Image 1 (cartoon, rainbow, N blue to C red):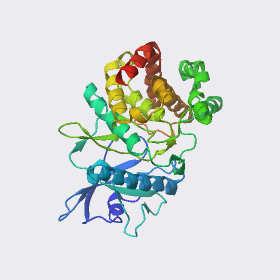
Image 2: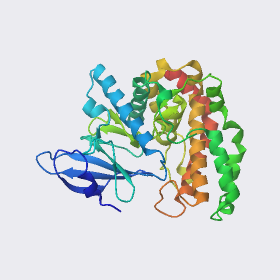
Image 3: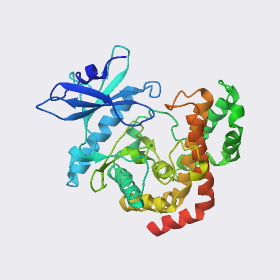
Length: 363
């Protein structure tokens, strides 16, 4: 594998790269933090894009370049600081948005946003409120962007009915002989399969609007000010595609309102915290609630449940297929991940009326 420090030198950075160390906790891409030498003395985020997950990398990078350019214009128009409030791609020395190494791997670089932190889990409703603000603002700022012009870099990414078909194929193939150990989880998915096509059907009938969506609205995809924890910048734009606002809201709740880590093995610790749910909901709706339709607002709690169910189903399918999509750090991690998601789904089902009341109150 080509050395990350060597790759960093192929981008239009202000001085020579001194070091490149692994950075972050993402499941998909390999990320490095690059330290530059004086006089720049700055830092750069360098990423090797996972071409086994993203097969159309040129289209992906076109999405990222166009969306970040649009966001910069919108931030400037509102009097904000585009140097901190949106990602800035660093072009390669030949002007391209990415570099391909000798092994055919693709790399890109971003300016590192200083004085920020990310959180893996929210400790307070206020922290999750900041994440809700960030993703709600992302929706609002991109409301005028023509969503249909974006490339669908992962077809059917949040088409839960299509995901269910993929899941059933994984169960039938059982290439690693793991289905017997996951029968309870397989039964959980099948018991709810009739709900999988609800949102896609509404979109196809024109009852839900197509929007620019982030599609991976985890708490750790928001940079927060290191002192105030105010939202600064939304990151990880690989899955920016045409989609539904309910996807972004739902995934934000899936991760942010959970009381435990995504791979928690003690399921008694896993639940949907309604105070955290309200924190994210209030932040999200305070930024973009006015542009959502009545149908979108009414379906927000269902969107949280469906995105949690879908993610659990994807973790389970990947476990059955041999952990080929989500990076794991120990055997059985994807099975543990799916179990936490299904525990959250079951808890949300008991709290759906309360979640609906919170949405109404936030509106």
